[in-house]
Image 1: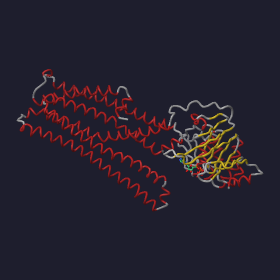
Image 2: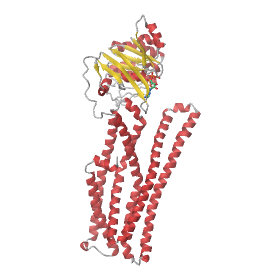
Image 3: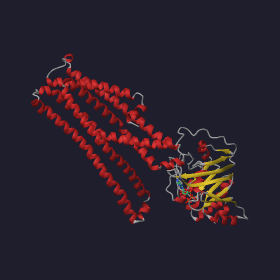
Image 4: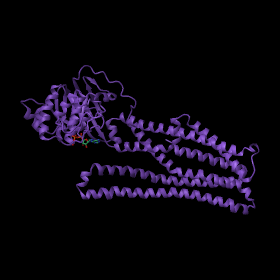
Length: 559
Ligand SMILES: Nc1ncnc2c1ncn2[C@@H]1O[C@H](COP(=O)(O)OP(=O)(O)OP(=O)(O)O)[C@@H](O)[C@H]1O
């Protein structure tokens, strides 16, 4: 969206403000020009005789006040705009489905939020553009009035310079767009270096390559393009300043001789040239800022359009469907989920799945790599919505819009569990919470974590296994009916693994929880009530485990 359109959308008074500032400043600048010119010529405006100095000071003051009011208005408007953009991107994002979020990608979201900060240049750009434009128009009008020939000459020069700047700017804009792309890649490589530092240290070849072929290569290209555009911008400034000096020289030395004019006759021309130097310089200086704002806006609009294409609801989660009674069952009926590529071709399909999870059941899910277990977990937790078929809770089919409410019934610990830095769930993490202390003890984290600090969150610097145990504490504190675990025990030591299967799961079951866990721990398959086995996206075995068939079932699941 264009900057002006955007500001008009943000404030209906925007054009009124620009118009008022432009009109007042036109009067001020025309008046100032006339005063300066007359003062240089030794004449005086008839109506201002004796008060020239006062009127001059008054005009300057009026212009100052007007510009100050406009500047303050622009700063406030821009800050509102920044807030609006930041919040609207976040607001749209939080209503995005997991599938839509995966498509957008975290890097693009970070970049868009970063781009919003660039919009903070808008006041500088607009104040410079409005003021300079007003001065240029007034100066040219004045010159046409006193010397049409001089007016024509300066108009031609100004027009030629501005066209030249705009043409050069179009080319620089292309380079700056590439610089922005390079910056995005650079941040990605940087993240790889920092978060994959261990892996980087494990291979000198990888270490060399990430530095020489990616980071350094990227920075060298960035430097080349950055230098090229900075030099072009500085060239613009030089061209502008020196063309104006040439025009000034022509006015002072050539015109009087060539056209047999007295110096006094060329004074308006010289005054206007001098008068225009400042505004034109500030216009040229502001072009890089303008270009950056324009590029940022285009990119933000791009990502917002992508988010809008993926996210239909952006204001509320709507009312939760009234589910009758306590949790009794989740039923999948002919549920499928398809991953598609960019051309909408199916790349992998899970299902059709038809089954029921009953209250209090402990269900283990097994299957080879890439067999569809995690995709199924995403469906079960409501992160993915079925491509076809229905999921119902206590017999009530979940409409697409109600999936966020459906997810509210489930606690989940995913393979790469993320622990928040703040206590968004407002758990009671105080030292005198007995239940918490018991859970910490149970998870053998007493020595590893500290509770009861001011910020009411658990300070942690934990190993992967400990992080999963802390995630388990939070999941238990959430106190939801269904607990979904994706390879929770994978990072636990043998002692804790045994504790999980033999003590924790039975304890949670005793509390009435329904546990659905992806696992490869075949030693403990007999701890489940039921086993599901996935293969190529389909459930190939759904076996109830009894003491009699436990070993047979385990064999089925392992084969
Ligand atoms: N976001 C995605 N886009 C496209 N295809 C995907 C996506 N996520 C998974 N897949 C594909 O879906 C198939 C099933 O993946 P899934 O992660 O569900 O399997 P899994 O059984 O959990 O495997 P693993 O045990 O290795 O985690 C795989 O072929 C995978 O490549």
